[in-house]
Image 1 (cartoon, rainbow, N blue to C red):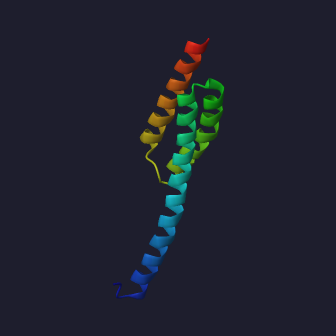
Image 2 (image 1 turned 135 degrees about the horizontal axis):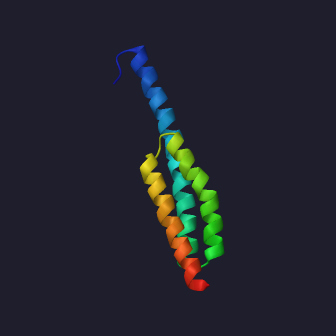
Image 3 (image 1 turned 120 degrees about the vertical axis):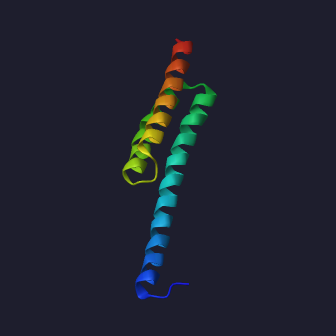
Length: 91
């Protein structure tokens, strides 16, 4: 238990930040899941559209400190690569 007013305030701030970060992470994961589902379905156009909406959300997670920059870049790169290979096999 906190013994000082500043420690109590820090606990309140941490709880607030945790909720915000949890929501942000969830939003990123939801967007990634939408891209994955489109890729699994084999729909290249839907997957590309989903990636187009997911990419800014992922990068926003980087700027807000929820994801590491390299992690986000790696995920976006791998998804784009899979989408491109999906559309290449269809064409």
